[in-house]
Amino acid sequence: MITKESIENLKSHLDIVDVVSQFLELKKSGANFKACCPFHGEETPSFVVSPAKQIYHCFGCGVGGDSIKFVMEYEKLNYPETLEKLASMYNVSLQYDKNFQKQDRKVIESINNFYQKLLVSNNIALDYLKQRGVSDFSMEKFEIGYAGNSQSTLEYLNKNYLNLNDAKEFGIIDNGQNGLYARFIERITFPIYTITGNIVGFGGRTISGHNAKYINSPQTKLFNKSRLLYGYHLAKENIYKTNTVIVTEGYLDVVMLHQAGFSNAVATLGTALTAEHLPLLKRGEPNVIIAYDGDKAGLNAAYKASLLLSHSDFKGGVVIFEDGYDPADMIKDNQINILQKKLNKPTPFIPYVIDFIISKYNLQNPQDKQQALEESNNYLKTLAPILQEEYSSLIARKLNISEKIVQIKSEPTTQTPQNVMLNSFDVAELNIIKTVLSDNSLLPILKEKLNPNIFKVHKNELNILLQSNDKSPLNGILLNEQLKIYTKEELEKQISLLSIPYYTYLLQQLNYNNELDFITKSKKVRELKTKINNLKRSNITI
View 1 (cartoon, one colour):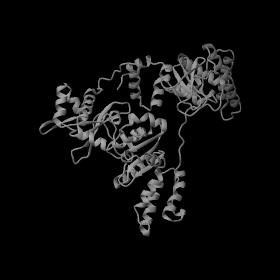
View 2 (cartoon, rainbow, N blue to C red):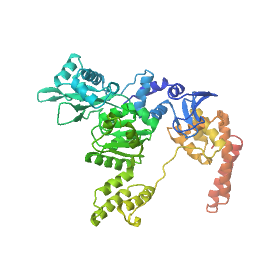
View 3 (cartoon, rainbow, N blue to C red):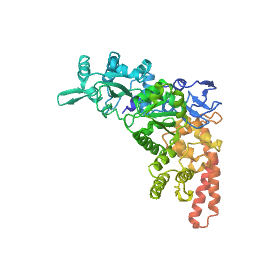
View 4 (cartoon, rainbow, N blue to C red):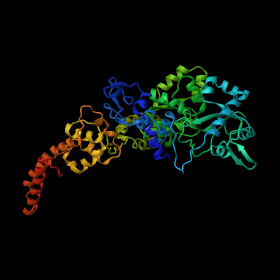
């Protein structure tokens, strides 16, 4: 893990205006800067960056935070990835805990360069790629290479004094009965990168008739094929721009789709789409287009992917390529317009699942028809109530039965907490919050002198201020130029002014309380009157 001291050092090198201006065009607006918010569509700028506070806030959609939070959200990175990206941008060295060893990538980067040089001199591998329609530009863009025999890889490692233990860690070589051997032998190689552009493994396609047509690097500390998508580091910018990602089955499908202008294409690494892929696919909330072959394996894989994606509320659908074709073949044969039309009209995930389920049964047989209904029902009940209602009629039409027979079951919905959005305002309360946000040294005074029950409108915001370490939901208050920042004396006075009506109300309620005995009630009345008198004299003892 990255050390706290290292993170603080990085933060000291970051300027919010400089960081954001590398992604957005900022314009000066008083003491702050403004831009159109990149996180929601707008024509009038409501995205404010404060150099004094080193934060940003959008008054349109409510997003906000510091330099690190902005890069995380804009680039769709996790926290460590963001720190490493910013450290690279600002030439800052990050330090890691002693029990964390950052992997030296020199060996795998060198091997990747070695494979690329071997490809240039191997006519068989080049001819195969040319026959598949791969251009020289695409070979260079995707860094396609060629791994020769095992001995050539071992000799390269030794000749260049590369660490053999690191080569093992990356799955480039391994120990066998006769000593060390290379894992990739006589294969076209496709380097696999993380979202941040770090190479972590390879995919390999045989050109010598090996039984395993494709292989991937073995599971390592850095390489987990169920969490990676081939080509994502090259596709991510276009995915966010088009709000669509095309998921294919193979490396060459991705290469050819990019070559034809579909630069939002990625592929799973020889495995079906899994739940572990979903966090990566979820970045940017794109529509997901599953583009699989029309053979039995492809149809089954598309069905499982559609189940997974429909349960996880993804938008998008499925495109199936029939007659032995795949996206790479269509591009090679100059059928790009037909391909575009297919990708523009995918079958949505839920109808695809229903069609797949029903297609397994002979609807002329009443028993099969009943089983198709039961399986469709079971799937339908896993969906949200509105979707159940919507697609029950589809099942009825497909089975040619009454819609009443299709049983749906509504599940109770739960509300998710929302970010702080100020729909109603109490200027006095907001001024107090902004004052303490601006000067954290005033927080003890607020805790000591303010009864939280005094706040009527902005209790939620006050609780965040008093209890939460993350104050970013309050950035809109901090950047609101119409709100005032009090001095210490003004803050105490404002707390007093807000407190007097509250304690006066409590006194009135106490006078009407007939459940307390006389002694207890008299004591409480005296305490409240003393408190109110002290407040009026600005001798605050709340």
